[in-house]
Structure formats: C-alpha cells, structure tokens
Image (cartoon, rainbow, N blue to C red):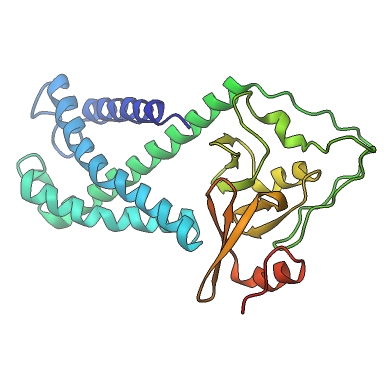
Length: 278
C-alpha cells in the first residue's frame, strides 16, 4: 500500500466533494458568496471534519485488528459517534456559516452526513489504491484444469491438504505467482484486510485483492493452519508463542505477532502446532 498515493487520492476526493457541495450551496449558502468562495468555505469545513474523522477510522481499524471485533460495524458506529464532537466544534467556531441550521440540533445531521462522506472517501481511496497496486503487479494467473478437484476452504484450526510432489521437487505454493518480484519469500502468513489479503514475507509484506478464504487453498503446498478468523500461518514460520492469561500469540520468524482465536487453541495444541499451555 502506497500511503503517499493514498493521501493524495483522499485529498483529491475532498476537493471534488467540496466543489460539488459548493456548487449546490445547501443550507442557505448559495446566496452568501460566489462559487469559488463557497467551494473554499466548504473545503475548509470538510477538511475540519476530515482531521477529526480520519484518525478515528485509523484508530478503530487498529482496535478491530487487536480485539477481533468486526471492522465494518466498529468503524461505522465510531464514525457516527465522532459526528457529535464535530457538531459541537462547528457550533462553537462556525456559527455564522451554519446560522441557517439553528444551533447544535440543526448542525448534528449535517455533521453526521459529513462524517459518513469522509468514510466513503477513505473507503473509495483505499479501493482505488488497491486496484492500482493490483494492475501494477499484473500477476500471471495460474491455469486450473476443469477436472481438477477443488479443496474446500479449511476451517479455523485445520490445516489445508498438502498434495504429493515428485521426489526431489520443492513444493511451491500457487499464491507466489500473484506476488511481485520484490516480494521476499517464503510466505510466512496471510492476514485479512477487508477485501484484501496481506501476504507477510521474511522482510515486508504485499497486498493482494482477494479474500483470505480464496488465498488459503493456494497455499496448499505449504503446511499451515488458520489460527484466527483473519490469519493463516505457515508451520515453518513459527518462531515461538506467548501466553497472556487465556490469550495466545504466535511470534513469526520475522518478529510479527499473530493472535490465536481462543476457540482454536485446543485444536492447534492437539495438532502439535501450539505447545500445550501449563
């Protein structure tokens, strides 16, 4: 993911949003100034919303990864809650611009709409950034014969099937064909990020536009386990484990830490993937 490009995409989307709202001139602002002035005023206020809502989205995404709370629901509710302090700031510092809205009660619905618009800008910019990365990589799609058996998606705690290979031939997961030449293998782990999969290597990682449940079967040549709803880990990538109460964490050979779902611990211990806690 290119964060500089991501920021430019979001900034460009904010300019376009301010231009559209400035052209429409809602809430009595159409007659207050000419078009360039309206666009500038709306851009300033929308960027004020962006400064509050954008860090909120980032924080909630990190919180979702740390607690396994569904990201979509957490971010949506968090963005709605962030609109309340946004409305208070606008009432205190921009009462003249929103004088037609009638105070906090009138500003709040507009603050909610603005917060939702910021969320839409962030989601759209992320998808466009992912599409640009996907096109830049231009991976070669592996050919699959029509009569080939397709293995079902493994459940949490169960390893994917490992097909037999010719003697002396090194197993090579099909997912490697999707990765760019800069990726430093082997593949250590797969992490779900919305509609993407982050492929972790020895040094660094790479995003692929696909679902985790579709990526796991392409790692069939590499023994591993799905240890969490959003994580798959290769057996050879485990450097150690950490225990904190009922929580278990896998430490990869590159230093990355992977959470283990509590309801999967027993199955992983029986399979020998995790040491039995004492």
